[in-house]
Length: 203
Image (cartoon, rainbow, N blue to C red; front, side):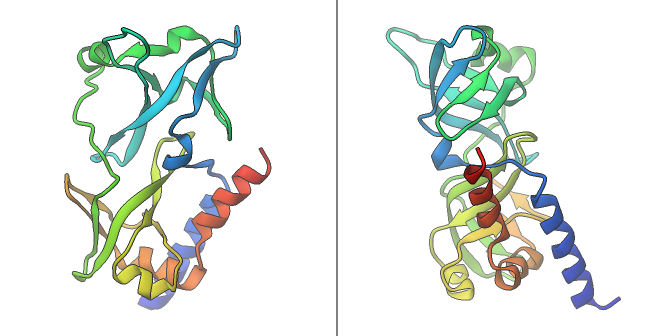
């Protein structure tokens, strides 16, 4: 099998997986209220996500502080029943946990940010910076990023959703991606963006 056929096979396989994902956009999750299904009570609004570069996962949602609250509260992704267009739904109020306690009990440390990271191809091209993130709300895996500027914009003529598959390396400042990710966007025309749109359409 030629290199070109291998790339095409990889792209077709990845596209089939997208159909099974529930993709959410970072910017659209921010500010959503978190509602308890047992009593309808709102326990807070999402201020940020807790992202782990090492595993490429969103593991929790950080809640905004309210009143004189001192401790940071989070909702673990595993405690989320649904991420909807207008709210995040959990079972009950006990799903809001203290971040400091989780740091000790579950090793909840080493998390970082992905917005603003610089993206480079392994051939050394600057593709731009991350301005938004697409993640699977069931697994937490970051499946793609929205790119703000750089060579990537010129390559794909305005399509700016870059899928993260193949071998992807994260550091505190940069993301390094394989050529396959760029090939998918150029040849397949933005499957991640369409999948995100389809998710919202049928909610």
